[in-house]
Amino acid sequence: MALSRQLDLNAPASDFEWNRWATNKSLMFVWRAMEERIPTTTALKNRGLNIPDVTCGICGAAEETATHILIQCNFAKRTWEAVADWLHIPLLNTEGDIKDLLVELKELQRCKNEKRAIHAVAIQTMWILWKNRNGKIFSNKQDDVQRIMMEIKEASYQGVKTRSKFRLVSRQEWWDFNLSM
Ligand SMILES: [Zn+2]
Image (cartoon, rainbow, N blue to C red; front, top):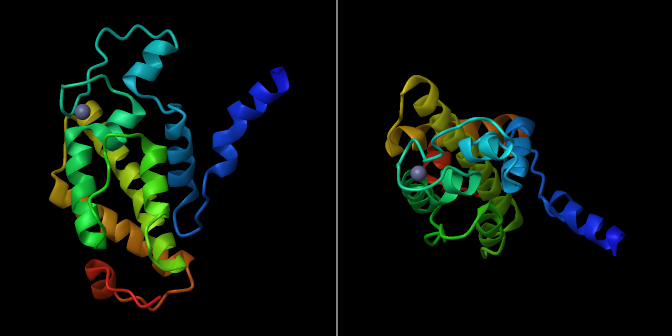
């Protein structure tokens, strides 16, 4: 009983999909975020820090958790809409959690490499949403969705250029997400 519970607790780690087109830093971040192990105000409060207000600093409409900041916040929803539009995929469900979103992407009817590219984009998107959140919290600086999209495209393009075997993908092809992989 105790052992099976322990195995169960370890489950998210083993089914987390690694992707060498994304940086280790962003992958580690998403893996931790899936388990609410990133320093959101709610997580810090749960760890005993004296935090009077755990409301999301971006929308002000809900408690700040990893799922909220990266998926369910209005700003995140608008970003995922723009990402889906760019990738030519159907609108993503942003009512669930990080795992739900990654599963949805995994089930897309695309070729293996295109799915790997889409997965890398999703990892990058969450990392950049978190950096944007930090900018807002620590320096009251927030980018708009358009600016965030430019960052996502640029960072994921660098990943494909430097870490995949598709080094010849042009910037234009990546920006149009018109790939022959
Ligand atoms: Zn929010």
